[in-house]
Length: 338
Image 1: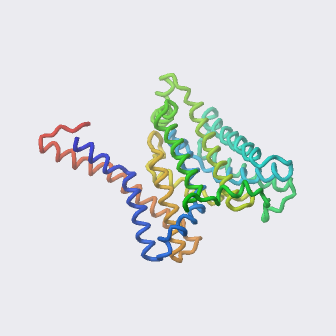
Image 2 (image 1 turned 90 degrees about the vertical axis):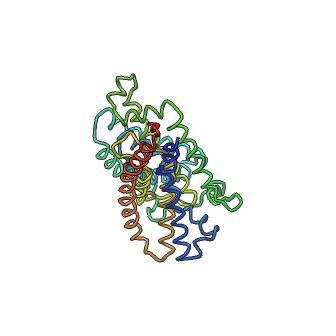
Image 3 (image 1 turned 180 degrees about the vertical axis):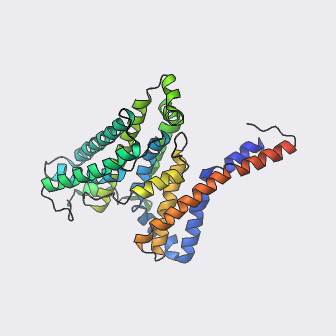
């Protein structure tokens, strides 16, 4: 009973919540403007695409895979939306749906190479990042659009949903909350989610259990493609412009958020709440550092340090505290619940 309480209190997600609160306190003390809700909520839009993609990349890493192509798919999604709307006269929402399908196919293609051709995930997704960036630039050139200008003048109905607020809270935050709930249910409350964990723990055991592990693994890359496309839609709507280079700086924050959230790069372990909280922690940190006067080109340095320190702390906290509490309960004559 007591150890169960300790286990809940010492969950990694609790540390991430405390980390976010600490960031707010520290950066608020450095720059009081940081504590203004209109400033904080207004800046959430800058890192929301990273938060959205991280949720879906979690599925990939739990299977033991890797996805560093999601940022490139964001740019591909953006330019596909712009071209379909401007050059082919598609309804803007039909163009968005078409872009999601294209992105999902890109993810499934990479997943097929990983699951069926047995190509290492790092190699596949690294190649995919160059491939999809190249495709986005090629589409831009074919459409005779200047890359640095992009495509703009989108309908108000498209650009409005990312600037819309409810009681001062950006609508993007509600989108993130809904996606967090959806991915949580998929991963933690369905058979499909259990299959993902089993594939990450032991793919051979999954096969012997009657699970088509290759289909499961391939599908997670498709989900990652969908997540990247949703982020691309959000980014395009928020900035009011479609460009091929959107998302190029998202790879490091995405992987950092997933790993910082408790997902093992070896597979078989990870949670959606952990990823969601870690993504918010990274976003708040980058925002706070920027408002504290740190040049944007140096923002990846503290994020990298945070990743190393936090993962190390997580490894230590997962061993020593629980051993300590087990020893204390045994000394008191209480049988541990494990």
